[in-house]
Image 1 (cartoon, rainbow, N blue to C red):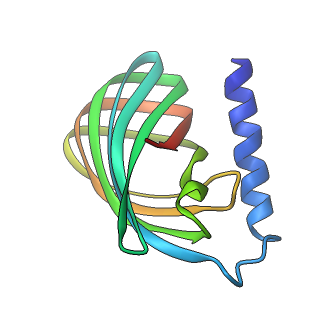
Image 2 (image 1 turned 120 degrees about the vertical axis):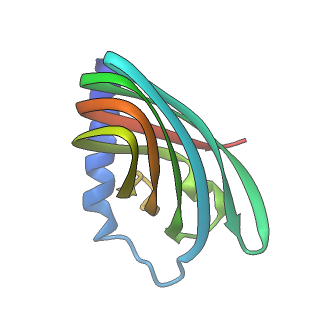
Length: 144
């Protein structure tokens, strides 16, 4: 619980800090990620992905926890853009989100997330599985 609170605080600081950070020299790239989420009250997620930045591919590792009402399992494949980065390592960090949702079968997903470095993920994708959730979740991305 203590690490969850810390992740939530970092995410809030990142959200407020984005408005103050200078984006004059920031760049962008594309990202594809696959996340598998499962849980009963406390949930976990894991996955992998690829950041495409300045003509190079950078493999990503993804992990996370959620706390609240979570029941079931799902897989989501996201594709989109990452903005406000200067180097590939700026993508690494904790992204926090609160939300409610349910999926049975297939469903479209869209999300915008920010980490403590100001990197902004704008993702769309498709979720498959059976899951119901009303939770706060933290997602940690790291370069492999």
